[in-house]
Amino acid sequence: MTLTIKQKLELSQIRVNRAEEALKEAEYNLKGKMFRATVNRSYYALLYAARVLLILTRYIPNKARRG
Image 1: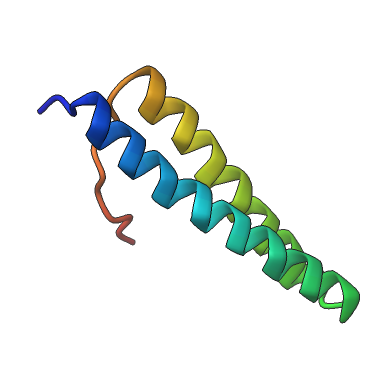
Image 2: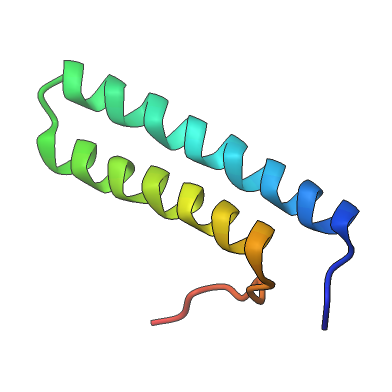
């Protein structure tokens, strides 16, 4: 399945929003000295941002992670 440019942009915006939210959560956790949670949310912020790049350069199926 190939996404249209419009679909790629829409999916990318969703991922950007998730990345921003995860980064805000990481900052909040860091202020509270919850370091494990900070690392976790930072990881997901980077993951979502990386997926945006992949979506815009090539199609990556939008499958939920299992296991």
